[in-house]
Image 1: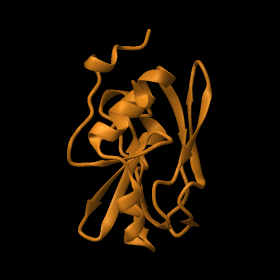
Image 2 (image 1 turned 45 degrees about the vertical axis):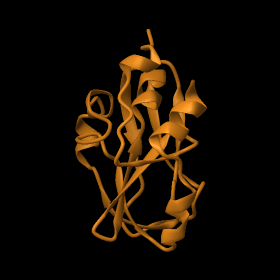
Image 3 (image 1 turned 135 degrees about the vertical axis):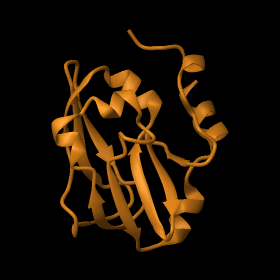
Length: 132
């Protein structure tokens, strides 16, 4: 059963992509994962397929998949760039995405090719308005 919007975590210091991924700029890189809303809609995540470091994607590209007992969902890039780090812990513990999507459940770190793309992402309020 999915939670009410008021029970989910929408944090202030990240940006949100309309396809339910988040982006957080850290020291010139961008950490990416799926939102609490997305993991809640998916249900218990049993497998996460992520790209390899060194691969390059454009904003909006599918970079992987999250699989739950209910469905398989595509993961979309919030910014263009090169994957410089992948959270390999999710291979053995995909439930971390459900437990803590903004911290231990992060998915990839990107070296963005265009920082201006971050300006197009949604604020906490903008994302909340979209999912309500």
